[in-house]
Length: 405
Image (cartoon, rainbow, N blue to C red; front, side):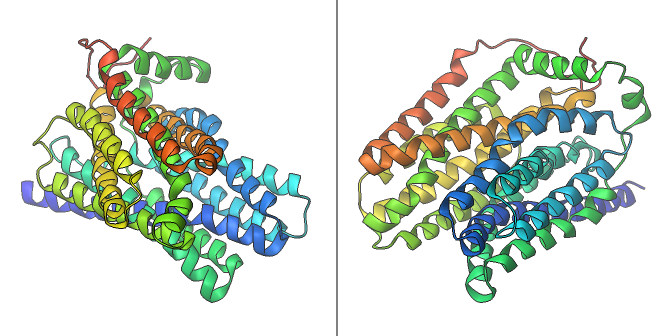
């Protein structure tokens, strides 16, 4: 009987992971594809960058609300599927409007589409404990984090390749198709338990407040959230420096994409190791050590040597991949069942916002001094590790069935 239960869980995990890869690859592809299509069809770099900013920044608002709705739904997978359909439809509407509608209208569509962005990241991961048992969660968590690395590796490469071969509009179309491919997997995700549904008695505003209290009151969750968000600011700064690094160190701005691939590959490899030995190191330790690893990588990247730069990007991935896995592990451990969706989507929103802030800040600084921008990013990564220890440790309830009041 135990054998058949294990087989059943494996069968449920495989479509979950396949759907996660498709959705997240489509998401990672959509940003570069929109920028390329915006420039190709509208002929405006302003519109291209505005579309990317609109679809990114809106996630900060949409995440918490979407999370509450997922927590209150009897079949959160079906709500998630609906969010994926609307996100894909929004991308399609932007594509149809480019060159035909005013820039303000296209950006407004991008903003409304971006509200659903956390469904592809935190909203999806929040459903994992219903797919596997508690004992299998650490390994499944590492595999889930690997889907982000796979998506960050495949998405931009697909966007550039499809745009080069078939045109920028087709790149947006392919990202829409990838997101659509995940809908069936989301639709079949397990329902919430009856006891969890019955515990949902607060108003939506009450649930939003309860989620904020959980993040603040849990030292483990506060530490992990603060460190990961500051790390994302540093990661955003590094990403903004990539074209200049490619141009000045590797001889071409386009070669900067290879650096991102190096980071994605090493992140994928590091998480593959964690998936084999998921309980070898405490996730809390991984979070702050990974921040220091990223700081070292950023410092190396400022040395303007091709070989050293490649090593730095590989090291950056080794820091980024396990940190994401550890962050998910802490959330699964600390968050009550009835607030899991909200905490995951809120966390995703905060990280997206931090990344966007870092990228926006680094742009003008890197133009003035590329080593200075990288040094600032390294300093922030060190501060991310220190932030982990600023929050005093405390003992919090980790019962997933508890309902905060």
